[in-house]
Length: 113
Length: 112
Image 1 (cartoon, rainbow over the protein chains, first blue to last red):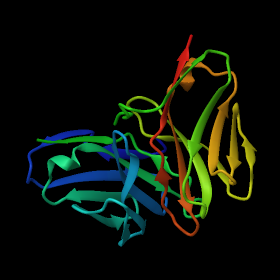
Image 2 (image 1 turned 90 degrees about the horizontal axis):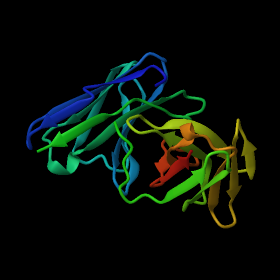
Image 3 (image 1 turned 180 degrees about the vertical axis):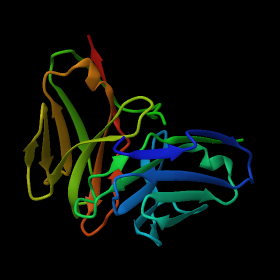
């Protein structure tokens, strides 16, 4: 998976609890992305980062926040998890020159009960 | 992570035959079109891309065709193998954007 790890790989949490997912890359790529994957929707972008401390919203950003304090780490936080956030979450990275050529991590399956 | 898509379009082909996976896109201002392959339990894997000013691009055993007139993209896989069984997604990136917009995917099953 192109030097990308995600942790945890599986998590079950209760409604209303905070959750943080971590994406770590060893490729020194500039861009990092968080997507969610749900039946019937394909992959949808939550947030992305174009550099340390530089982030922007994607198409489904409500209820999520992100932080990037180092090039290699991109954190996704659900401040108060809801059942609608049960999904598989993928992190992706890309180099600045070909940002459309994204490489994905193995994913995190999150279940909110 | 797992490939999802309980209601995905499906395509079944015999091993050794050619496969054609189709995708309709909506944004005529997209710059690049990309195909990804997602095997069960894994993240999507980049296969091939095509720029909007091209109509055909070939890779190893794969060919992507772009028809901008009808906003249609296709992925052709030659001599399909069991390892090609996966969900295939098309994606597009609008001009000037850094993010991708994905289609819902097609599940390809190769019959030995």
